[in-house]
Image (cartoon, rainbow, N blue to C red; front, side, top):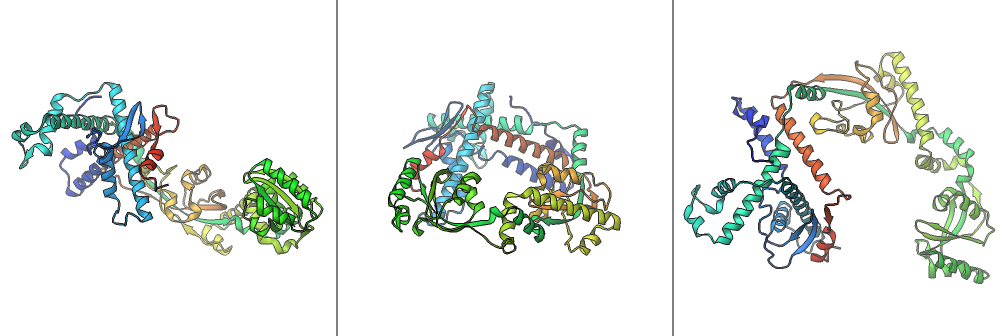
Length: 507
């Protein structure tokens, strides 16, 4: 890397004679681009002295990330705290949250800057003494009335001047990284035109959705009758022990005392570690499927096969080791009275059945709409509310360079569409107004879409600069993701432990 002049397209645009609106747009982009570097230019590695206590929050490439009140980390914390609303009582719990967020933000910025410095050093980059001199001349400490004040510079101690020169060197290093990695880009006209063609065409769609919860009641009853054991209840009690040894003690203790009517209740009070303890372990009449979710179908069969008063287990679960006791006979309610319970079960465990049914229904509606020549009329006649999306381009995963997203419509049904391969594969083939999609599975529902409108925007006059900005932001994000990757061999993260040493009340 080297300190070279920026040949960014934006700089070229600035030299052109343009109307005031365009200039404002370019200036706005410049401000945003500078913001990409976060705290990089805020005395990034200045104040390396270890004034007072210091804490090592981690390291990158063998470089310790230390905190002292007057080093880069300390300054970053001070700046981050200033950005938050700290006008609350320091004993207030919200203040603790603010403080944690500010420290985390500062730490992250210093980690990134440490990584940048590490890689630049590895590359052999070093700003020239002349470049450092130029920075010193512009430094506020040595200026009077907007001019460099030689007397002030001479009067400063050698320690101060050395520290300032080190700081300028480091700031130049950070600037070089930003310029070479983020800002030095070339995009051919063909590439710019390709990106614009992807962004400029925006479509909006009319659509309806059929939620899985609309699964027909008669089919729910049919499923319940075919799987009646799942919805058979049995009154049971349970004791949850923390380990197998303790669970076996429960079994032994109950077998010794089972003639005592209150034996299980007393043992539950002594051993159990779940919310049923206060009720003597009683779960009441419980569905087969709920017990099966804890211990599996085979073990649940054993529970339902018990004679009243007998126990079985212990069974290992995610919540501990459970011993079950049968408190009464099993019984099956009228399936027609359990429709909502069965519907909830199917939404959790039988999504495939619901999805297939709704896809078939959507397919029938699509065929009707095509035959009638009107999507909206057909859906309205079948009691569906037709909604319209916001306009958006083909933009898988919502790339900010390409603009809008189907999720901008504000309908929860469309959440996740931006990254749904099923959605895009069904939407992209709709090239003519009134074309109707194949059924699309979305968020526990099935939807149908029809192309309602298509518009092509006029090219932005600052398009090349916007491309530069978005590509730079993407590069920075990729770099930051790589830096803090848990599998990184260079990054050692000790933030939580050190933060809690400083603020043990945070918890």
